[in-house]
Image 1 (cartoon, rainbow over the protein chains, first blue to last red):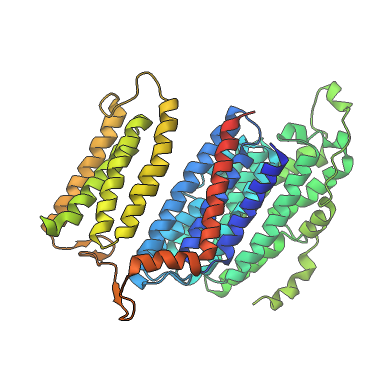
Image 2 (image 1 turned 45 degrees about the horizontal axis):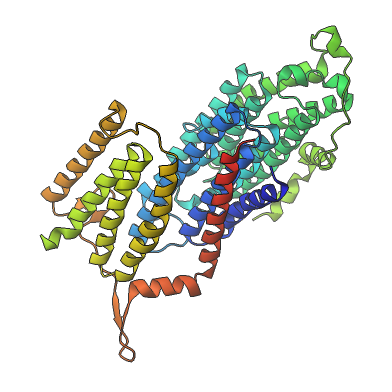
Length: 346
Length: 175
C-alpha cells in the first residue's frame, strides 16, 4: 500500500478510538466506532488473497451489525431520558441491547464466532492491531455505562466466554487461532468484574494488551504462525524460546509473573462481593487456557519438537529488529511486585 | 386522509427499504432509493421542515444518487436480477412486506404502539417567534447550529467521508 495512504488510514483508526473514548455525545461515539471500522478494513486486507478478503468481510458484517444495535440502544435511551450524554442507561431494554452490541464488538460469547476466523485470515501484524487496539473502544463504553448493566446477562456472557475461550483453544495448532481464543477468555475475565469494580477491568485490559503485544511480537520475530514453525525457534534465536516460555506462562496467570495480578485481584474482588462459586468456576476454567499455553511452551522451549533433518540447519535473512520487545517482555513478566501500587487507582 | 398522510408515507418508505434490502440488481435498488428519497422528503415536509426536504431532493437524489446511477450503469450485467427472478430475493421481499403489513395492522388496531416505548403520534419541529426579525423554524436553527457550535461534528463527518472514499479505493484497487 502507498505509505501515505497507509499512514492516513492507520491514523484514522487511532482517531476513531480516540473519538469513542473522549466523546460525551452518544452520536459522536457511534461515529467514532464507524470510523474505526471503516479504516481498519484495508489494514486487515493488506495482502490480497481470498483468506484476508473473507476475514475482512466477516469482521465488517459483525461489527456493522453491532453498530446498528448500538444505535438502536442509543435511540431508545434518547426516547426515555431525552438527552444524549454518556451516563448510565435509563432503560433496561436499551441497556441489554447496548451490552449485546458491545459484546459483539469485543467478541464475547455468544458472539465470539468471528474472532478465531477473522484472526486466522489476516497477517500477524493486523491480528495484533485487531486483538489489542480494537478492544479499547468498546471496553471504554462498557466502563462508562457500568452502573446500569444487567448483571445476569453480563456475568453469563463472561463465564461462557471463559469456557469457550478455554475449550475452543484446546484443539488448535495455528497460533493466531490460539491467540484469538485467549482473547475471548481474557475478555470474559474483564467483563466479569466490570459491575463490581471497573478499575480492575482496566487493569486487566492493560496487562492483557501488554502480554498479547509481547506474544505477537515474538511470533512476528520468528515469522511463525503454526505450532510447528514456532517449535523451530531454538534453531533461529534460542533466547526467544525462554521469552516465549515466560510470556506464555504469564498469560496463563501463573504467579510470580504479572499475568497473575489481574486474576488475583478479580478473584479477590468477586469474593469480597460474596460470590464464591463464580470465581471458583472461572479459576478452574482458566486451567484450560493454561493447558494449551503449556503445550506451546512444551513444544517450543522445553523439548526439541520432532522435525526433518533439513529443518535443523536453518538459514535466515537478517533478523527483524523489534525495538519495543525487551521492555514489553519485562513488563509482561515482572510487574507482580508492584501490586500494592494499585491503591493509587481510584 | 391528510391526518394519516405521514403514516401512509412512512409505510411506503419502509416498503421501498424492504425493496432494496432484498438485494435485486443495484439498478433496481437505485430505483426504489429514488422513491424512498422522495417519500422521505414528503415526511420531513409534513413536519414543517421545508429546508431539509429540499436538501434531500437536491443533494441526496440530485447529487449522490445520480452518481450512484451512473456508476451502476457502467458496471451493470446483461441480465440484472429483478425481485421475481430469484426465489431468495422474492422470499425476503415478501417476508419484509408481511412484517410491515402486520405492523400496520397493529398500529391501526390500537391507538398507540407500545413495543419498547409508547409511541402515539409525533411532534413537529418547534417554530420560534422572536418578535424582532420574524419567525424562526427549529430545523433551520439546527442546521445553523451544526456549522457554529457543531464544528467538531462537521470536521469528524467530513473526515469520515474522505477516509471512506480512501478505503473504498484501496479495497477495490487490488494488488
